[in-house]
Image 1: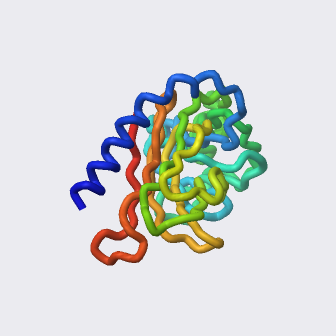
Image 2: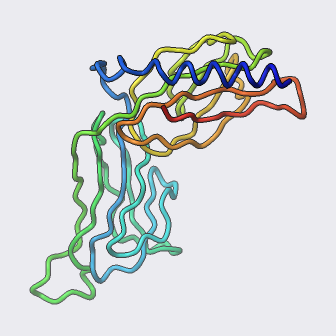
Length: 222
């Protein structure tokens, strides 16, 4: 076991020195990054829903959420008073732009409480170019061959054999659910966070058929 772990460690160290060329890639980031900013002074804390599912809770005035990685395109958004069904904004249809930071910002004042000189509450989408992160996948699990790597529901690497590190791919920065599958079945998953401008190796560790040394995912920043 010590020799096995030492081999993994030495291989990872070797991989850390092989990142110089990744920053010349110019392929597009396939996702859109999405966040929410509460800028309505007289609106209480709110929850934000995407397609009727709560994704951000109890966001107070002046707060901005972390970014989520989402598929670009049309998305139904609602903003409600936190913990209630009282709708502040929406539902509205937003268009998330690929490879961009999409920040939904609520401004103005709730109509029932504002004076005549104050603007009504409204939602605006602020869009700017995303700084990418880079990641690759390294399968060090001896009994886990032909695995597929997904970010959320997007396939990034297919049929990865034991001992074969992949090439780097661009990805938007943010928190995502990374899933390892075989034949459509998930064998392990983990929430990981990528930072803009950084490079990572996602390492699959452990043994699939061992209850004590089970599979796990390690995120190594390079």
